[in-house]
Length: 236
Ligand SMILES: CC(C)(COP(=O)(O)OP(=O)(O)OC[C@H]1O[C@@H](n2cnc3c(N)ncnc32)[C@H](O)[C@@H]1OP(=O)(O)O)[C@@H](O)C(=O)NCCC(=O)NCCS
Image (tube, rainbow, N blue to C red; front, side, top):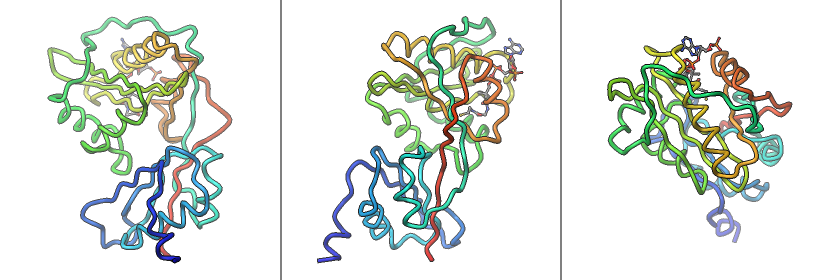
């Protein structure tokens, strides 16, 4: 009976298992990405279903409201993130540079993933599946790339759910940073959010990411009092 309960699938959550499973207990074995607040029973069932995972189990970035049942189950903070909000007024103007923006295409994926890998440490870097998941995380999304001489040099993924909009992902090739490309991708995302009828745009970033923090603040995002936390759990 107990086993049957623990095996029942949990709805409203995506579980990403690392393949192949790490043998190192400190490596990340799986990630839990909830789309709704999970209760203690949900977490117990998820951990039971991940009982074959050797490494650590981590979560996506969780708001304070989403954390208590994870913490009850023994999850602790792995990393804290800043959360920024933009009210979609006083938006930046288009920056003129060498780049142009266009819709992202399937054939851009390899180049986007390469920029992503050079922009984020391995914990945060996307693979093909995670890029698709970031785009599909909200009912409506926008995927733009910046190009110079037809070469993709930056990308942004934004999404909308109801009147909330999110800048999900942003990266610029390290070789062409400081030319206004990041600014223009964020400006494009904010303009899109307004056209979509959004009320605000949210973005989060690692507390150690000074470049992103400076960029967002200079573009009118305001740092929220709430931080988000990525939690982790290691099998006792
Ligand atoms: C954060 C990031 C996207 C910024 O991209 P970028 O293209 O360098 O951004 P910009 O060029 O628009 O702005 C960077 C700086 O250049 C300045 N700048 C903007 N336009 C410029 C121009 N035409 N000429 C010279 N400098 C310019 C900006 O004022 C900004 O200065 P600041 O850092 O003092 O605020 C980039 O550093 C990156 O990919 N980082 C790794 C991934 C990441 O952190 N993503 C976001 C967090 S989720």
